[in-house]
Amino acid sequence: MARDPLIGIVGKPSSGKSTLLNSLTDANAAVGAFPFCTIDPNRATGYLQLPCACSRFGLESQCKPNYGWCVSGKRHVPVMLLDVAGLVPGAHSGRGLGNKFLDDLRHADALIHVVDVSGTTDSEGKNTRGYDPLYDIEWLQDEIRLWIEGNLKKRWGSIVRRHTATKSSPVDTLQAQFGGYGSQVPMVQRALDRVASEQGNLPPLEQWDDEWITRVVRSFMAEKFPTVLALNKIDHPDADKNVSKILLRHPGTPCVLTSAVTEVFLRKLKKQGFVQYDEGTEFVDTAEDDPKLRPLDERALERIERVRDLVLYRFGSTGVVQVLQASVALLKLVPVYTVRNIHSYTGGSGTAVFRDCFLVKSGTPVGQVARHILAGRSPSPRSRPAAACVSARTQPSPRATTTSSPSSWRPGRLPQAHPASPMYHSVYKPPLTKQRAELLV
Image (tube, rainbow, N blue to C red; front, side):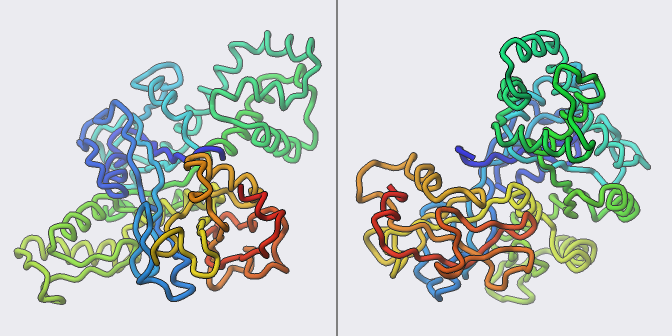
C-alpha cells in the first residue's frame, strides 16, 4: 500500500471500542456507558509489538528507534488507529450515526470489530441481559455490505451502459466505482477471481442480477476490509458460552479474547509506579514482589488478584497486544529495517542501530519499497538508506518463507509471509552492485 496502514476499530455503541483504543494508545478517548459516546472519529497512534532485529545480533543496548521504542529486543512500531462512531442496525439507510460511521470507515485498510461477549448490551448499546452477540457480527457485516451495494445499485443502469459502450473489462468498471473506498485494481481483480472460483464461472457484467452484485460486493469486502474479532469483556460470567458460539459459527475469522478495561487499568498503575507490567503477558508484579514499587491499598490489591484470576492466568494476557498483531497479520505486513551501514547496522552518525522500521506488504518489489521509504525523506544522498533489512522469525513456521541468505532470496522482492506469521527476524544483505544501488535510490 502506498500510504501507512490505517486500522479501524468498529462495533456497536458501548461495546468497548474507545476503551480498546485507549488501551492500545493511551489516547484518552471519551468513554461512557451510553450509546454514541463517540461522535467524531478518534485517531491515535498504536504500537505494534514485534521481535526487533537487534536481538538477533545481540545489539539490544544500541537499539534506539527514531519512532516508537525497543526494550530487551521487543520493538514497538507505530500504527495508526481509527475509532469511529458506533454502528446500529439500519445504519446504511442513515439510522443513528450510520452515514458518518460508514464514511469514516472507507479509509481503513483492516477492521477490528469489538464484540461485547458479556451479552449485557443490545444491538443499540443499551443495557440488557442475555443478549446474543452472534447477532452483532452478522448485522454489522450486513450494514457495510448494504452501504456499498446501495451506492452501486443507485448507478447500476448507467454503469452497465458505460461499460458496454467503452468495452471496458469488469475490473476497470468496478475499480471506477470502488475507487472511493480506497480500492486498487489488484484488489478488485482478486475479489472477482474469488467469486469466479466459488461459483465456477462469472457471467458478463451486463448480465449480473442483484444476487451476483451481492456476491461481488461480499468478495470485495473480504479484500478491502479484512476483519479481526476482538471478543471483549471476557471477564464477565456469561462470556464463556458466547465465545464458544462465536468460535463455532465463524471458524475462519481471526478471533482474539480481550479485556480492554483490564489493560487500561494495568497500564495506568504501571505509569504511576504501583506495578511492573509486561504488556502482552500475564506477569504483574506489585510491591510485595518488588520493594521498589509503590505500595497499593487493600482495595487495589484485591482488584489485582481478580484480574489475575479472571483474565491473566486464565487467558495468558488481556489480548490487547495480540489483537493489533492479528490485524497486521491480516494485511500481510512485514517489518523492514533501513540502515546506512550493512555491517554495523547504523543509520548514519553515531552507534545506534536499526533506527527506522517500516511495515511493508510482503512480496512488494524492493524498488517500490525504496521509493515509498524515500518519499517522506530529504532527497539528500546522506539521508538515503544503504540497505533494506527484513526481519524474520528466529524459528520460522513451516508455513512461512524466510530469507537468511542471498541464495534463497527471490530477486527484487521481499520474502512472502503466511498471514498468520508475518513477524520475521533475519536480515538479507545483498551484494553491493550497481543494480542494487539503482533499486535503492
